[in-house]
Image (tube, rainbow, N blue to C red; front, side, top):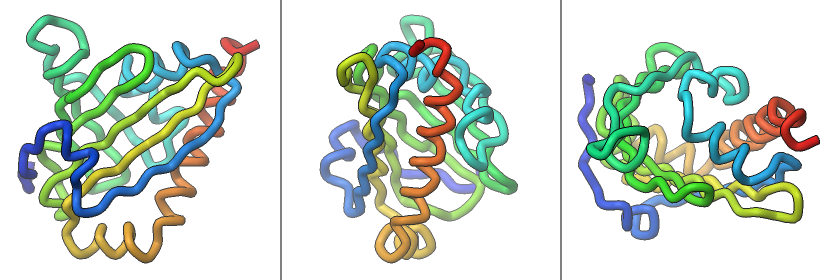
Amino acid sequence: MKYSLRAEPIEFVQTAPRRRTWTADLAAPQKAVFAALTDDPDTWKTWFPNFRSGSWLAEAPDGGHGVGARREVRLVKPVVFHETVMAHEEPTRWAYRIDGLTVPMCHALIEEWVVEERGTGSRVTWTFAADPMPLISFTLRFMPWAMSSTFHRAMKRLDRKLAPVAA
């Protein structure tokens, strides 16, 4: 990776210099949404905008894709992330730290996904906790609608993808 990020503890989700949170309600049930987030990262390309591919690089120390597992995510060129799972609390909370990336975005970054049961559906909350470099700082401060739009499109696509499960 061209840029290594500072390794922060999971508490950084609450203490980061810049935090943005977005929420969406889905018809899909909590367990199906959590599985879609945490299982095969390559399936994200079917519902998350600008996502090109993903793969697991290493299992967690105790096996599987829990805390300590590492993955690679490729967005539109030239953006590639290497991530480490920081929280895996099925079916409610999943978080990962960005360890390295190919473009200068942040000094530190953790993303957290919380999936709550909501009737027969679910509520998804995505928190982007960062110590940003100037470009992403500008986006987070003055153009939060850009990331909000991406998140909401992703959740609509994911809900459509999981619709047969929700029916």
